Image (cartoon, rainbow, N blue to C red; front, side, top):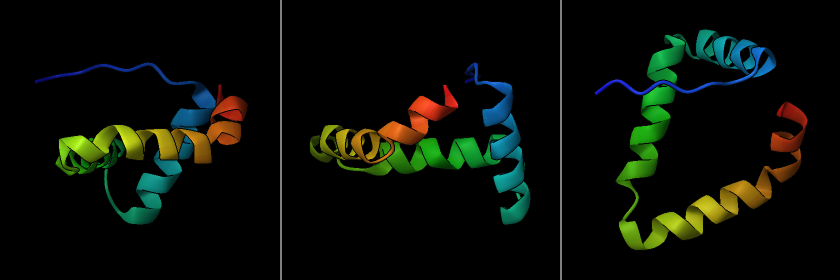
Length: 64
């Protein structure tokens, strides 16, 4: 399955830099992050997602 997302140039730059530091392609980093999220038991996914969003609210605002 192929999924396309849109992110800002700044976010793309940050993604590429992080992927480079980790020694992977940006697409593989995004894929791994998605798989990690999907691996969380379904009862816990919503709670974890809320915690991540709350924890990173200011970061997301600045990146938007």
